[in-house]
Length: 369
Image (cartoon, rainbow, N blue to C red; front, side, top):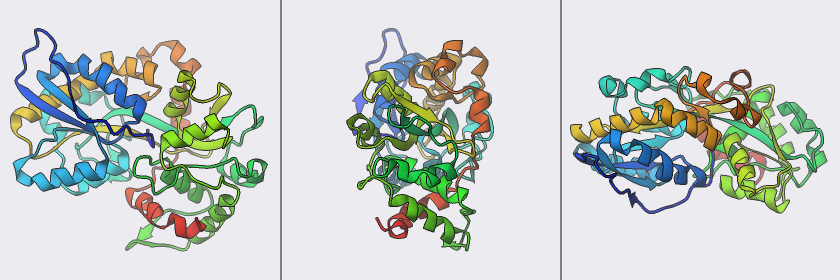
């Protein structure tokens, strides 16, 4: 999702399809996708949307801090970034910097925008979107475990804490300071909430509810593997090596890794009954680019939200749809993925972007890592 190994690939100019009129060149900067999704964008979604976009689409995978700084440095000149793909806390930060276009002003070119659903099309990481992001997919984090080593997995956060010594040294989550995966920050946020923290900050300061929750996490930390992975890919690889038997990561990445055979076939997932982080990947448009490039970007996003792209994306990539296309998903999807009802029921309240950043800043000190 969320949260994943990012392939630092060079920008790739895709060939224009025969017979397609090209009026513009636009750049798509992906600051969210993991390695599997980087490939999918380039080989599947972008070629499928080339004709509708009426532009040559140049794709680049990059970190969100770099992308934000490039947009800010370009200022009113617009720069060379047109379409962005962002995680919830990142789009909240970009919106706060005032660098994103209000997509609602391009409604005539984006009728599929109306297919996106609440709450994700209204808010991201506790921040009102006000039209700045289009929900491309939705994701869920999950507890991941090796069924050969864990016969009876925990189904609640407190059960995970109480049973931590059963897997002492073989349990872990991604380092919350990671710049390429948010799964560790979300793990900590949900753990702290389950032990009473309201995750509220006043002038950047924790209230009294944080202290006891941090103490429980520090106790849990003592049962973790010695080294936290610094990316989602490295974390999932720990299952392949047998280093860990219980972890926490994006559901889609775990399922996709099992499909590829890069983790043992005994890998299973659980959506915690008392709430797991869920969210969305957002497509956005840089605010200061020229009007013609905005139009091309809007056409691309509209295509990405079409049923013809959304249904294959769910089937192939194990993400939940960004639009109301649920009824068109084939039954075999649910042999692998949870149903919409389970997805909706398991969702915990979204941590705010401020809380996630705070967790990243103070986690190591709080748990003694």
